[in-house]
Length: 179
Length: 179
Image (tube, rainbow over all chains, first blue to last red; front, side):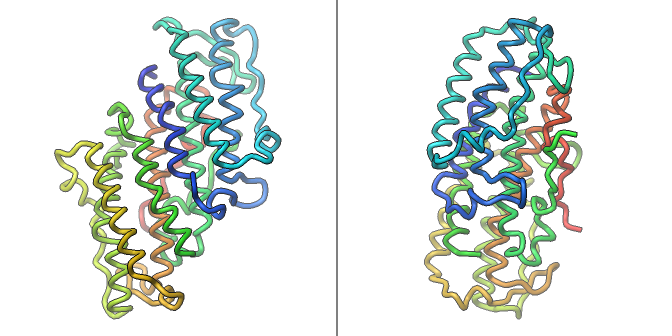
């Protein structure tokens, strides 16, 4: 993990999701992969919730409390309440604003090399470090980009006919549930 | 498959890839998943090649020849030659320009409802229709977005420490090889 590398990726994600999703018909953004799965709209709501409550707040907990206090668990259904009545465009704007604020605050922490090894306590995973957290933040963005591409592809699984054999995303069974 | 839906997605892909990748350090864009795998840079080269030789050219073959003449096979290694010496920024620009031209030409074909059932002959998959091809074009974009998110996440597999258990993209084994 290199902080500048991580920040470069984290800074690009909102614009990438915006360019991918804004203006698309609902058939791509409001549809999911079946019962108890998420739409792209749901995923953006989840990214907003985790941006607000998880990544930077947990980094600050590590700096303040180290491993003496566990992080609060993630509410994986928060977006069902928080996104209600909002448009996808509003969510994309909100995510971009929150991410920009997070990164400004992250830079202002002026982290030093020795900080990255500081420990934190994850409620399910046990001891982690600030470096793990910053790397996981970037991979979390990529997990949800991976998921959104799969959700959208799913809508054309049958429409692609014989091509569905060759199109790898249609063979991804999702790997995101903790186990 | 609905033509306007498909075009909406196809039109967004170059800007999404541009926003995701432009300006990132090479550690994200020039690295791959191991021997004989692709980097994000390689994937953009592949999208350029298929944009130029496969999707719209095959649609036009269907309209001209129907199922009487098989499509040319895809050259999956073309980007190794064609991308040589180019920057990622140049490839992103080239893909955006080619996609824009493809979609202008696709719209100008003025396809009618009866056209979508017209048959074509895929060299490996056999008989397909124009509708299958247009749907597969969109899913091909998503397959490679799915792949790029996985390639980039792979670079931080170890860096994410215990979090790697929870981050689904790190458990995706790739599904893109034809079999």
